[in-house]
Length: 310
Image (cartoon, rainbow, N blue to C red; front, side, top):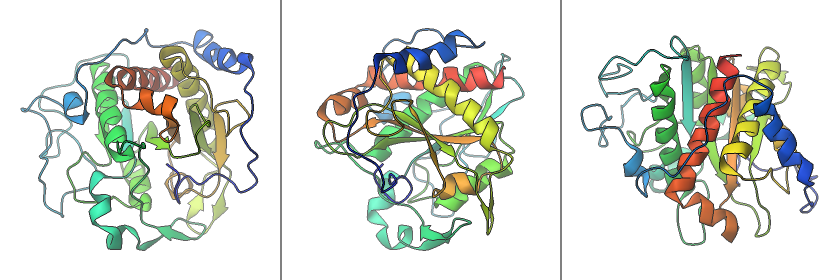
């Protein structure tokens, strides 16, 4: 998502050749920790609708503007139409934050409004990026988030989405952070895809830097967020086969940022993951493939599960 909530630092150099050992080292995070997910195969369906819940438990797709931001299932505010199965994540709460919103493009005035991010002010949100063929980041993030929700609920976790296609735009970046805080989430993951130059490939996980000022104080979450990010990165390598970014993070797959409201305002462990570069044809071919999106969800779920079961 090449925009205000994920612009790379201006000091970035050009693409780097990533050493082979970088991906292997990240995969080793999974191999040396407990709770790694199994190998993921192709998932059902080809679009966001394919990953939605059955009609009996899916949120309303036509909720009015006043719909609460935190999207649980079903739309009456309960976490599930049926009791969650008991599993290794029973008693844990995970907030999944699908980056952007497909409706943002029709609400530019609202999303351009300024919000406080603790250390300054930024736009409420942006439209996100898209592939050259027009597959929007907001569609990608919602699809992966729904798949991820299903995987985590199958392990007993209570899962809350910051939006589920159930509101016309937003929420703003400060509200996204507040949702995780209000839920006292054990982990929050914001799902994104980047919009960099052709030839820039791979994924990276964004970690909160040490920030204290205004309404922001990440001192309590820097260490646990890094642990969460490491485990997600290791599982993502192993399950998807994707390599760490060759243009951000010095081939580690990790990048710390102090300019993102979604991280600055969080009081619970939180990371962003940029699953690939939508503007590179090779990465775009992965991001638009339903089977690969299922693997992406499996990789992220494995990392979250490993972190929560540690």
